[in-house]
Length: 365
Image 1 (cartoon, rainbow, N blue to C red):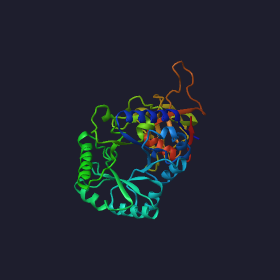
Image 2: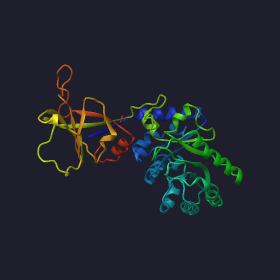
Image 3: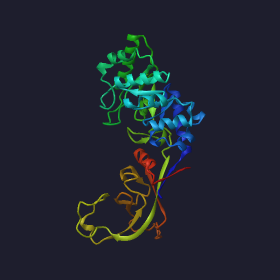
Image 4: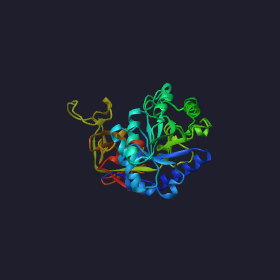
C-alpha cells in the first residue's frame, strides 16, 4: 500500500517559529488544521500545552474535526472557519468557541443554541472585499451589526475577510485597511470594543515582511505555512520554515519494457488521465512502472516526483503508470525494480486527498 509520511518534528518546529514570528510583530494567530481532517493521532502529537501556548485558537471547517479538537485537548479555544449551516447551530455552539459568520438567520439560530446551552458564543463577522466568497456587503455592515448587537448570547469579537482562496484576489494594504476602518467605525458608533480584525492568512504573511499590513489588522488564520512552510501567493518558502514536511511513497507493482504508443483503436472509454505522445514515438519502447495509487487517492497534478527523470504516463482509479526511460543509472546499473518505492512531494490539496484516502497508509516520523 502506498504511504504518506508526515514529518512531525518539522511541523512542530514550523508552528513554534510562527508563534515567535507573530509575537515579534504583535499579531495573534489561529492554527488551521483542516488539511488533517480531524485526525486524532496527529492532533495529539502537535496540540500539546507548550505548542498551544503561543496560539490564540485552533480552527477547522468541519464539525467532526472540531469535536476531535475538543476531545484531544478540552482547554483549546476552537474556531469554526466558515459560515455555519443554520441547521447545525447546536453543534457549532457545542464544539466551537468562535465562528465566522455572514448570515443574520444563522447568527439568530446560534444565539438560540447558545441560550439553550447556557453559553456565550463568540462570532467574527465576515465582510466581502472582492473575493466573492463569504462576507456581507460593505455597505450593509452597520445595519447588520445593529441587528445582532442585542442578542444576549452572542458576542461579536471581530470583523474578518477571506482573500485569495477562490479567485485569488490579493490581500493588499488598502483592502485590509478597509476592515480596520469598519471596526473603528462600529466601535465608535456603538461604543463597543472588538478584539480581532481577522484578515490574515498564509497568503498575507509576506506582507508582514514588507510592513504592508495595517497595524489594526491583528489576527491571522494560518494552515498552509505552518504545515508546508510556504505562502500560496508565490508558493515559495516563507522565512526559514521547513518545506520538507510530507513525503508520499508509492510501490512499484509492475515494471516492464513496453511500447510508448498504445495499440488499437482509441475511444473515449478511458476513465483516467494520460500524457500525450507524438507520431515519432510509434514503434519506440521505454520502461514503464505501475504504481499502487490512483485518482481515488490523489490527483496527479497535486504530487511532484522527486526523481526528475521520471515522467507521467497515465492514471486510472487505482493505478498510476510512469515512464522510467532506460531505467539505468549514469554508470549503467538498473535504477528501479519491482518492490522499490518512488517518492513524491505532495501539495496542500494532495496531502488533504491522501489523508482522506482509506487506501493510503499514514506514518508519523
